[in-house]
Length: 265
Length: 301
Image (tube, rainbow over all chains, first blue to last red; front, top):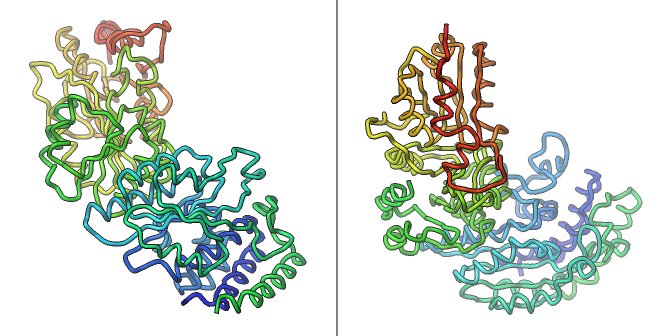
């Protein structure tokens, strides 16, 4: 695997530092999907493939992933959330070539990915679209429109859901219970795989699954993954890190990496 | 205009980057286009939000997507997709809204487009096109096949007077030269009003506006307003975000506000009753008889 435990740790620490230095929240949802994004970019994306981040509030994880590939600089990350930055709190339209669409309002990414995939199909080009949504985002009706469309047109899209069970103001099951989401995708006649979103080898295998047409990968994750005092607490959707909580988080993800190294290598 | 629209687009059907999406509308109008375009004609279903996002993706791929629906189903239902996915990215998607103004008549308020270009022109990079005559449609389509910005095409029903040979499409056209009041009209209701003014013998100076926002005021128009000191603006759109507001703003900036400014607009549902487009226009004072009545006896300096 190209994605080593050391690289994952480096990305996780850089993500924490970026959010700490910029004093911004949304760290919980970024930690829940960092493994997914790193796996998409380091293990799954081919030269003809494209990725659309629909859960735009995880822009930090996307920026760090692009940084891990040398596509954004350290100075770019340092500017995150600051006046004059290219790296707004949600992915910007136009200013970063590797990010095809600015997103942030939920329920847009899958339709956009559908347009890119349909464009490839009409032009006879190869390549696959990867699109990451949150789970709370499936409250949006536009996602179900897009789901119907990608299945009907049998578009080459891998839809990944970051199933962390929490959304902006509570647990997803207490707000608009969508369980079981994987069964709903299957009812839409999508081939659907279920994986643990922090099990990188399994994720890589699911994302590389050969499929003609759309594929859904429902990835169970933990919001705030790797940081015990954040895990599964919805307030970390918003809270910034204090200096003490930052130091504690760094210690914990470093120790988590040491535990997982044996599995990954 | 729908037939002129379809027949012109059929001429572009072989253009390999042209993609047409409809929100499940076009019965007895778009069938020839569907036949000619094959897989590049996509019925996206009754799902306008997704249709606009898909169009943005197609445009980003280098294709030229056109999106068609009854006007409010497009600009109102999918407003955020138009705002975020299309306009914030400046992608050349053409949004085609059928039934401008009260075009869907007795079908009711859900189908009317009374605030369409006002709403859309608050967004970055988009331009609105308001053909007045069938012949405008083909010229606008040729133009929009090449443009690099998002566009809104508001289709209505041509009311071209038999005696009029419209000048080629332009943002501003000087349709009737006169020594009396200055009149500026946006959209196809210009045809009926022009005909009535022609009959009435009123020496109005009539301008037709077919592209918004206003980029520059024609010097001849400004001179005319300065001469008459009487400007009447007519459009089938509510006052907020209207052409009249844009024009008043431009005239004020240019320091040429006329002494009298009359603005006839859509007023919603005046009596609470429903009827044809003609009925609603008459309720708003947008019908040719009301306009002629307003202008009769107006003296200018």
